[in-house]
Image (cartoon, rainbow, N blue to C red):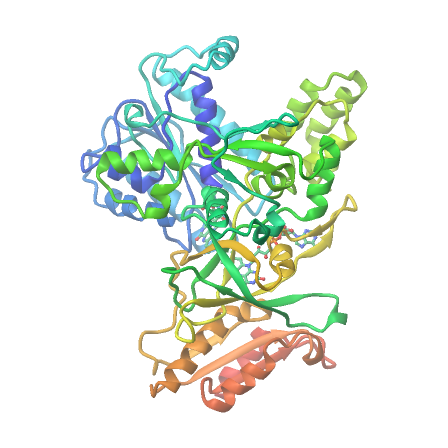
Length: 583
Ligand SMILES: Cc1cc2nc3c(=O)[nH]c(=O)nc-3n(C[C@H](O)[C@H](O)[C@H](O)COP(=O)(O)OP(=O)(O)OC[C@H]3O[C@@H](n4cnc5c(N)ncnc54)[C@H](O)[C@@H]3O)c2cc1C
Ligand SMILES: Cc1cc2nc3c(=O)[nH]c(=O)nc-3n(C[C@H](O)[C@H](O)[C@H](O)COP(=O)(O)O)c2cc1C
């Protein structure tokens, strides 16, 4: 999300006449900052999140560097921090953005704006970001004494293909989890571009990607790998094709719910440890894609030419400037890669079709609407009450909105650029590499519900995982998410594991690890497992495996809480209290 926001801020600042460079915080330090620090020309915008109280993966070196920065060492740097966090992580909510803001001030940098943040667990995130980015551009213009570039002039510049320009000699630097490198060090910028392909035309392309829901139909493994690299460009580490080796349902067919155990083959060189996560690239559910195609009047196989943007190219540029060696897969990402792909793939993978349009976007649609009665209705929807009653409350999608207001002109490229990128999803790995280092499993509950507008929603990621048959691929990678959620190094250390529902997944990985250690002759300490579900017949997943682990001594206690089996509801927390007293 931060990366997406950084790109939006960059576009806004460029529109106002600033030269902008976007990159990760770590690369900012390695490339432009060096040991001297952040640039003192222009401004540095930091948009960052927190993972379990720690910095994101691509900001770890920056965090260390900033922690050691001497007082006054960053004098002359002007900055603003925007934090993206989730208040469900109550103890460490916004921990890293707060830390960055505090340390920058302590090191003598001057804040252009006070620390600002959003809670992704609440509505209004996009609008809050829009307001902050407007304020930042205004603050930067005022701080550097620059007059904003007139709208018409900016548009004329774009029409002539003029690149970013610098008014008043003040580069503004922004980034995802973000970066700071003088604009002069940046590579030439290219934006993601999507263009229709005229019937019968055969444009020169680098890669052809077929239907995203049928990747194996592409047949050639290299092509699939290229698709994974490009589709995964929005993730920090890139995505790789993970072959489905096994997929089985864990709940009875008549339970009304579905949870799948899915085993995946890891590509050569990809390693993990028990407790790690798998990051999976989701795809919009087919019904959402179908509705978008209908709105746009397109067939699923209508071809488009998609030119990849320079996001990762910029990262490559920073790294090269700093003599930093990037992992080969990131270095290989090619900005400007030309991809021929059908509308269904672009709508399936590139943007989040289930996202609720921001109030600002509804206002913009009202302005663009040529039909007076529809424009008036859109303006009402853009008012505070209209928006919460008619858009955010019922979780109306942009496609649903545009389907109601047919006079608003739209196209596939516009739809894709108006919507946020489809964010990767995380799954706890439910296996251990000690059992098989090339194979890992996930345990995935299917998300399925009907929205207040009556739209049946099937989870973008869980739906894809559940429907992908053996032999096909999912796109993803292993992530450790800065977690300390690992087995103790000493296997004799006593452990207590608590995991209701699919929360059992990481415990399964830990138990598989202990089983392998036991088989190898290791001595194990006591281990209690507390699991919770509705009833023995409905959703007691992995029952045989758990009972087998108990019999073999992999665990020394198995306590299961059934919330709907007996006369009274029993939950895992109650079971844990009772079980611990017993033990
Ligand atoms: C660290 C971590 C580990 C995780 N591990 C696992 C795991 O091991 N197994 C697992 O199954 N999941 C796991 N998850 C959750 C997983 O990442 C996804 O969030 C989940 O699969 C849903 O994604 P989706 O794309 O299928 O659903 P989406 O298409 O994103 O739909 C989910 C959205 O719909 C909303 N929603 C859900 N139900 C309803 C309803 N009834 N009415 C209205 N709105 C609703 C939710 O609020 C949510 O915003 C984990 C998440 C994290 C952060
Ligand atoms: C494993 C995990 C740990 C998280 N830990 C925190 C946290 O400690 N504090 C917080 O405010 N948000 C936390 N979050 C929420 C993220 O900051 C939030 O999802 C944010 O949108 C991620 O932005 P990014 O995708 O740009 O990194 C966590 C999210 C995940 C998946």
